[in-house]
Amino acid sequence: MRKFHQVAAALLALVALSTPSLVEAKSRFLQCVTYAREVSGVEIRGNAYTWWGQAAGRYERGHEPRVGAVMAMPSYAGMRNGHVATVSKVLNSREVLLDHANWSSPGRVERGVLAVDVSEKGDWSKVRVWHAGSHDLGLTSYPVSGFIYQDDGTVHFAAAKPRVDRGVLLSDDILQLAALER
Image (tube, rainbow, N blue to C red; front, side, top):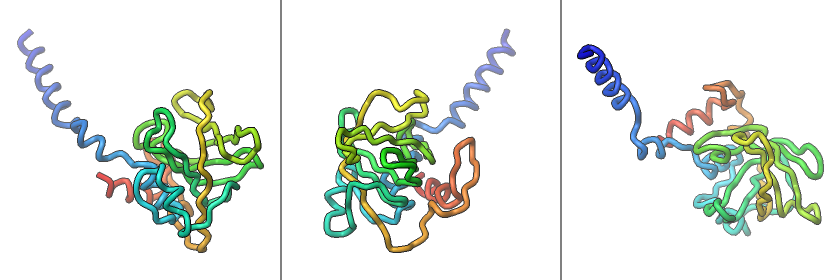
């Protein structure tokens, strides 16, 4: 029995030493704004809900999704800091694929995520976004301020050759960016 307690204590000590504290773990999360800025080249800083206003006069803005554009979402319900995501593909007039971070789970980067325009006028003012945890679009419709366009022809991280890392598809540049966030 004594040997069992010694082994158990050693294992607990090993786990405690190898597990980062909550503060350390939080600092490693890749936020949506950091990801969107690096992927799109839209040089805006601050909480996602401020991006739409900050883009005025600096970037073209509109209500039509384009590949490479940043979809800006204001504060809403439990999403107090808003959200930004980049459009990776336009499927049709009411569906796009997004690349973004920190949506389905803290810090997680997701690529090729379905977003559906559910606005009454078809103007992309309200969307439902795929959530990996529920494997569904869900019932929540999120407001969208619009799309911020960066059309300078610059190749950004999204064009880098992707690779698989721990089950999530990431480019080498995004992995390097995430390492800097630590």
